[in-house]
Image (cartoon, rainbow, N blue to C red; front, top):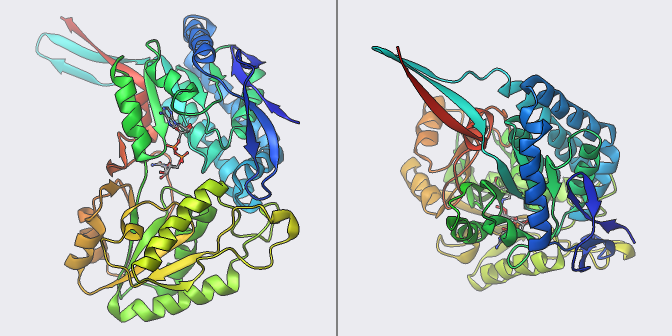
Length: 482
Ligand code: NAD
């Protein structure tokens, strides 16, 4: 059986406790690896190694040399892209086409992006009468990175890359559900980075590696992507040592479709914004609002498109468009939303059940058909809470004011999508949506220099471009009397 160990100070090591847990393929239900479970002992070792590396060659390395090492990490991932993609699929259940076209290439591109961008960012300088102020940027220090399971490599390197580009050292706590590609990243880094610069400690969240990291007095910052409730726990844990925090949290994102929308383009993109990665994307639009004149046509086209194009099945098959959900436990959680929608009187236009006719080797897999629900009131659980599965609710609306009120009636504020060919309306509506990211006539189109993050319960701070630079550095102002 394959073992996944921690990576501390440049070496793969087992747990002091000898404890392991199972890494399960959610499509087959098979155990694919035994993962070493870390805790305080391993986090202590990783923090000591990361601190020493900051004081060692890494801390003294010229920026150009550091950025060259990041480019080598990107190339190292690309050289083993097929291995990374297969590991991501086995861990997560996502279709192989998604892993090999999005997750792994973007996971690698993060290193290129931040290495190139940060080279050219100047610091500020303020001239005053008789004095000059200038600012120096210094690394934040030892940074703890806690990642979720939904886009494991992409979301982990989204934080590792800017952290290293700024000269920090990192300790990654990957999701217990998907540790494989972070272990592969460590394997790539072993030949490239000095020991202690990139460390990985596997384990769970509370009372495990996660809490050991967030409570550690010698960790300078925590950057976390995951559930809002976990963010609340981490904030409390980090308060004792006043760590700098960056949070990318959950969402209940609205898609606003106006009657003047280009319906074909909208349906094409809605297929992705609803069901990409089985709907397990924080940016998926799970509440769709359609202006009444287009409502029926939208539903007819969406359902027809689902029935004619979606293939739920073996994630390793390139023809599969919808793979397995992350686990049986998560599927059961998604099912509770379907049950409550039924109890609330919803109509299921399609989906809501396990697909028929899956092959025998997927009998234990966590599969769900893409699901479209109508007829729910705004206060129903399925309309208010993040489901994180291939499930959307569709609701008609009449006016711009009404849909803005509906869209903003949530604690979350991550992303939103507006479909309209009226440019003035698109600007007007986008400006009033309470979301950190608004897409107009598109979805998931990302320029990595732009700000990424959520309002309200969807996050704290922004990452991407210079916003990542703000988080991963300390700015020091120097004032000289002339
Ligand atoms: P999660 O919060 O359950 O777990 C995320 C990570 O936090 C895991 O590594 C877990 O082990 C760790 N963790 C859990 N409890 C902890 C604790 N007490 N202390 C320290 N670490 C702890 O989230 P998940 O189920 O893995 O991911 C799905 C969630 O992530 C969804 O809510 C989704 O919206 C969100 N997400 C947000 C973004 C974004 O950019 N805003 C991106 C992807 C996913």
